[in-house]
Length: 205
Image (cartoon, rainbow, N blue to C red; front, side, top):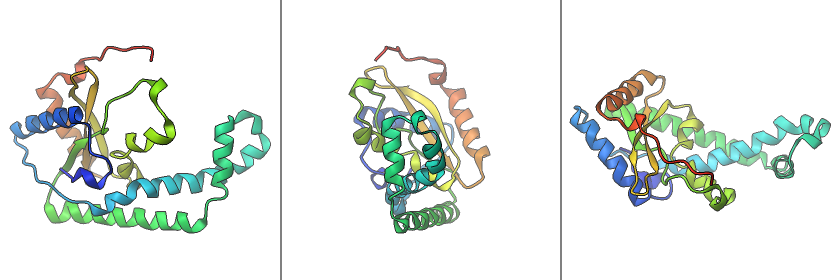
């Protein structure tokens, strides 16, 4: 398991409990767990944000000029702000991405681990009316964005419910180009549990 404090805020207590139980289940299937450290994971969210911001505007510049009416006002503002993003910030983000890729390669080679196991999200879903994108989006992606940033294979499997009957996911992250391993682990977990066949109660909020 990676140190979660490197990725941002700690998971909610309910999420941590459910994921700990899932990891215990995988341990009973024969897996061994060690804690590992990824210091550069702290750079993942800022780097991803800088890349999204820096690349989005140039990709949409022509379309915005020709079809401005097809974009909502918030998206238009984001594109216009993106076009003002300093090139130096984007270059720094690319360097951070490369550094994290190298750190991950070294981690898997030096420790001999087959996968990382961690929560998919640090919290459960919330009513849409309560979500503030600027406040909540960063937290919602803090455990998943590092792997999207560096192109690392990752898999999320249902692993339980909180006391409020909200679903929780267990995220498995594999070595570069080793999707097969995390699929095997995920399949073994689902063969031993029935969380993937259960459904939460849905509401319209």
